[in-house]
Image 1: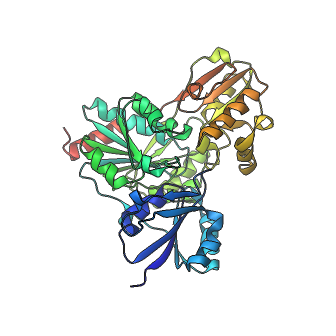
Image 2 (image 1 turned 120 degrees about the vertical axis):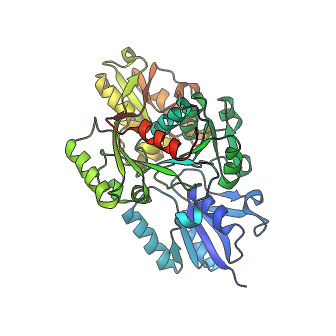
Image 3 (image 1 turned 30 degrees about the horizontal axis):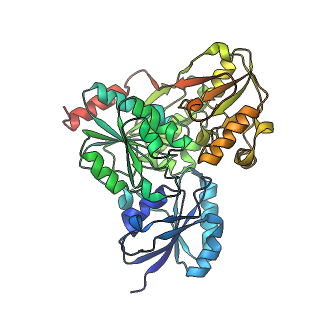
Length: 443
């Protein structure tokens, strides 16, 4: 039997999951390569034999996506799988046109073939874009479940950036020391550390079948914490999707964010305090047009500054969550808003950027007033440190979800900006989750 030659185009997340759930033991297909895009430094690796299965005893090579034309020619590829997220529809269309021009079909795989079914009830928190507020919403959901006397286990969308994927097959996090044990990047720490500090067990990795089996052994309920605007790897019993009125229209123009919106049981319009009324109403109209049965909750993400005096009236550089302000297309985040409220003078960080941080600014031209907290490896973390310490400012505003000063040495006064989800009016998440708990007889 001739096996159809396949290349999976991804970003170290959905691509691996699609392979594991559908292609790994499928004798009708031959996955000749993965390609990687969007996240710096994740290409030129190997998907190892420990993960690739009996059909791929030597593993599968991962290449930069720019090498796709030569891979198609070399292996006579018949089909490419587009398997990464947070893409505007015009980019999806461009990828389709590019792949078709090279000869192969192109495929976008959906929930039916890729979602795993859990033995435990699943609450999934997803979004229509990166930076809508999934993290604080996930914290809120898990805290409500804990307060109800339940044991949630949080499973996080993959971020396997270590060169050795065998160390990341199924990771369990219970204490902060586990972050060092698994050599976590800044982006991973931003997502994992707040959940661990709440006392909630967290899993992440590469093989989400293995992860689910382990998590089910200790969970009353599984909470899925999505990445970018990807849809859940697990079939949700309750799907909560975040939308962002600071980016109106994005909820119906990005892939696969609109998939989440259409499937949702609950849609949270976040940031309503800082958004314009007309933009909120545009988002609401778009929700109603594609998912009129969804329960809509309005929410805010109120900010607190650890020490306002450090930045009040001072010249500052603002460090923001990396994905939100890079491929999330946001020109600013919580740190910038807090700095403005404090009357700080916000300084352009670009003249001080070095190495890959400078390259990040060259790639994301919309960034002018904030410094993305890039840290996908030791070298990039060092370059972030050098950029901050080289800057001619009085203080640093840290708008990331973690204490950045514990990871890099900052030679200037600095303070953190924190933010949590706050629902406005009823129904709220407590109401929704109370009904969920009753329905699934969890108490």
